[in-house]
Image (cartoon, rainbow, N blue to C red; front, side):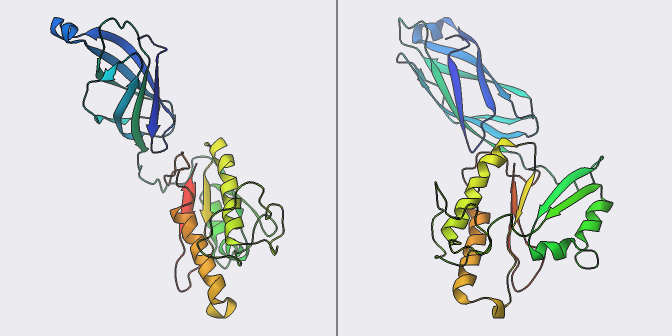
Length: 282
């Protein structure tokens, strides 16, 4: 096996671990007779901003009849952002085999880092896309979020109605997300195609853009609850189900950092009967 004959696949949405074989050798004459080849690998965390937490090797698939002899899982531990770790694996190599290709499988998670409450050292640009609740949250003399952010070294811009979908009024709470050509795309906020399924589809359509801009933090704040006189049972059930989908299901399988330092769905600041949740990720 040479340096271009190994690849790796890591589960739990961690695409940034690179595995490179360093050397292969028989640890002893006894190992040679039993055909147990030791291979030393370097694992490199190519993500420059996040720790790979709880890295472990869960298996390996090889060509030419070679099989992994080392019991799995093999714990590697945490790998710092941009850092390396080494691991040794033993393979059973049939007699007569002089090279083979192996695919290493493993898992890792983004480490949960403590939140940093300090203002940024230099002005950070923040764009707040909102409707009326967000406007009230920002406004001086009401929520005062705008002035508070400014005082903490954030340069705040905002945009209001017309940027995206209104509340999901039609459909059923359990409707699956619309895929492909979504009829809601490009429609105004009171479109007749505003359904639970289409609204989910619009948010799914955002994920490739988020994934292409890992250097940006995206925060999605779910819609706040309404007073009973401003809605009905059907629309309220749809809104609650849509909010829960954003928090509990939207980012499943996203494949990138969803720690608080990274895309998010979070609790709406305007309280009523029940607080609504929030989601984040890069």
